[in-house]
Image (cartoon, rainbow, N blue to C red; front, side, top):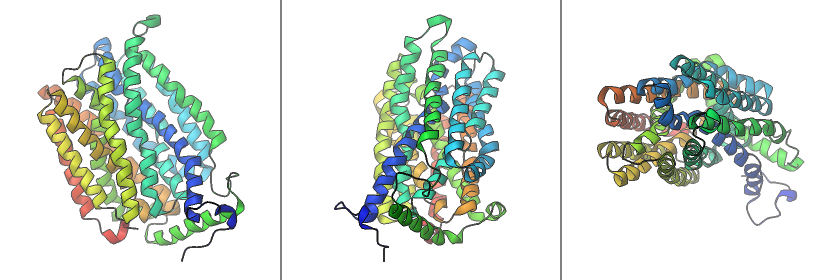
Length: 437
């Protein structure tokens, strides 16, 4: 039987709990989504910079692949301590620190001139950004119970395709329009202009986010009691998970989650880092045109992510809502790679790949957060995200190396398809009773 909610929050025709969660959603989720759009744009805009930097600085495909991927080495090293610090210090100050730091480092890319400087700056950017994404996933568990979380995380992670929809054309336009302005290349202007939102939004975090339900002045006393009770009840259901940092490393389920997430991240960053190059390979000319066509797969992804997220929550089913998108993504990569010189076929199947692989990302987190709570959740989410995101290092570097070796992205795309199939198999082997709630 659902707990009652005071009349002060039942004035609408919708269910009392829906009214409360709608209020929470509109207060925090769109703002966090804005933060992630900014984060993702600064993380992957190197894929667009590559279209000019390679010629200006003499960087090979392998150098770019390694530089894109080395971001995740720094990310990996600081992920767990960052998430534990956020759990201790509070989301508001810690997320603001992350965003302001990465904004400054991203702007400093204008001074990169050698491969060593490129690697070092990407490593520093990873250190700065570590903890943002898992921190937000952890933050969601403070407000939303497990049975509402898939669609909430799907909306939040819609920031990835949104960043592609708006960021790719923006990056292309900046690079074309500002080329040689003030003696700088277009890619330098892109880095400096796209760093500004991180600094501004980072400052806004301090004034807008609340660390917990109890500190939210925009909630009534009855609303706070109801939300706290729901979250506490959800935590009792999650008692089957590890409760300490040490226990996290000893739990075999955590390592299975790491492996599953690794396969999905391989596909995610293979797509997002190399999308401009894949579109350019079809024969499209002009950075703005490449950016506009690159946006199409992300439009398809944003629809698929939210439809699947709502369906997963409505049915309280997690595994098949991950397996099907993973297999769709694998088909998309395979066919797009096989018809790389055909614009229409490539865009259609890159759209399938984007819809599949980007849908896997938010829905995945409904698996581990179904059995992780408290300090175990802070540590577990950070471990899974940091280990899984090592694929963010492996994927761009692998594709760059194979492209230099074979003068084609085809083999790399086939490998990404195989990783998605492996991920689907591992999800299928995960017990339904562990995650379906």
